Length: 197
Image (cartoon, rainbow, N blue to C red):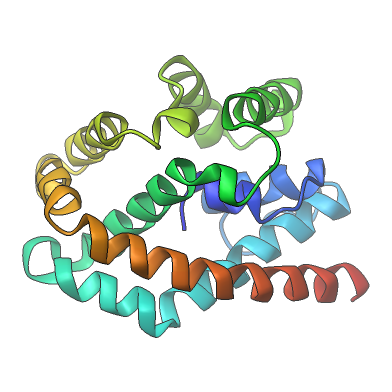
């Protein structure tokens, strides 16, 4: 899953959200100096990733893209799934998406000093181009994919992924809806387990 899903699965706990958001920028256990709830968010992020990578529905989604993108198929699917979450946001949250993402950006800006350097570098671009809100639009996904492709020096060919999103839109959306229902149940229980440990 990508940024929006990880934030959503933090269940509005601000410290969990921060940890879940920055987790990909933190190696190993180099987070023991952070607030305990931020540490819990990092652990939750890793549990979500493990569950996602092993899930049959996600693997089915990846297989549709494997020939074209190889190892990058998983990255593409993570972003596609955030597209369907953003596009169908009203099915999952009573807070409108524009208000939600504004709250997220303010939270991250207010805690900028504790964010990992990699996240500090990325955040201004995320806010300027309003990634989280624009995930709902295919044009927004195309911009993200073009940026990802540039970062791989065009090796990944992720700039082509918007074509797959258009052609296989129905199949990917069905995969997302079925998978996300299970992921929400898993994540809710896992967060309770982490908080009570």
